[in-house]
Length: 147
Image 1 (cartoon, one colour):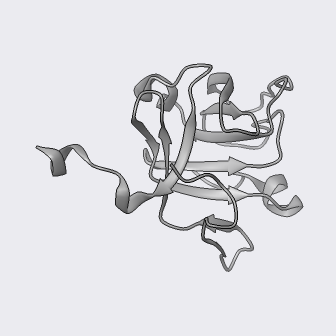
Image 2 (image 1 turned 45 degrees about the vertical axis):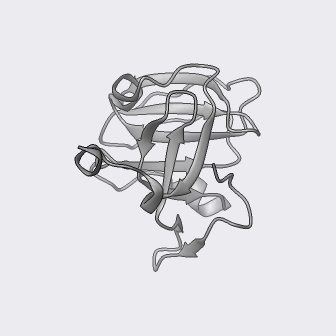
């Protein structure tokens, strides 16, 4: 699995948001695709804005915020799931269906968080202790391709 770092292609969009290009997040423990399109928020501005102004996330989307120990949904219009990760991308915290105008406590040992559409944690069966990884979406086998 590819880890975040210099080998991950990152581009900046016209809105200043940084995007991890054609990258998927995979639960290496269960070999489950968690998200196929990941936007990275790792500057003060992109972390501050996060998902504000959006109407939702597509089922295959995620926002990866780093560094981050806790999040809020103040000003948001939709519920999300959050997967908190340590420096090795091991899951150290899970929050499901966080509704707008709420905040999480800080998660000990978290260094980043994946924000996903509400229900994604349940759908993908991610658990605390699971190891996540990043890889090009082109390397992700989709069910229709393996049938």
